[in-house]
Length: 113
Length: 116
Image (cartoon, rainbow over all chains, first blue to last red; front, top):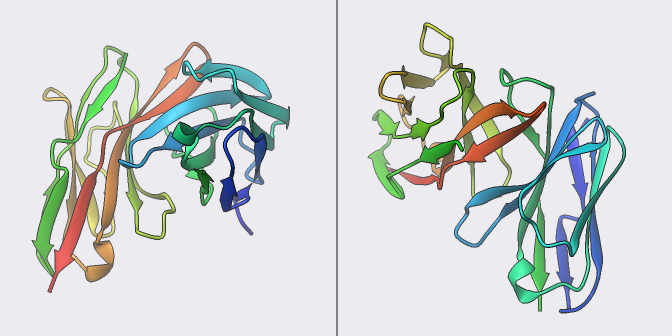
């Protein structure tokens, strides 16, 4: 059983398109995140949701819109894709609290051409 | 705001030797968690070890141990008896509860290469 699954694993698209990445966790966690890993491998948080409620939005352009229909799902929709959006996007989940690890999905490699 | 610093962009170690990956952090919050993750070339993020700010003893998980020096704000990862499969990117991260939510902040990572 995959704990945190995100789809698709690879996404190649043209500039200006709109695309979505889906994420689901079956761990019963309250909190879900989206992270972006750039070409230098730097991992930066984009959004954090707790029980479907947006908690953190780290100055992400409003072309990025997360949606959490329930606490097991956190999807990421990106409008008007730009070349600079090319990166690996990771979904993660964790229980509430600072004493346990976040579980990551396998990542979605987005390439904008 | 919290910050994590990993000063070693790349490290080499010979198989079967021990290696220490450095991590320092900065936070004014008294309650936090420190984590190490491994990212092999296949890309997945693998949790290795956790240390809580109030934990008195250093965390250990198999060949991994965390050298936690709270006064120095350092949380170095020690890998004993290195194996070729340990070659990967290693990230240190800090987790602090902020405003009822939470955030895991990562360092820039250390690329470890294990050689024969």
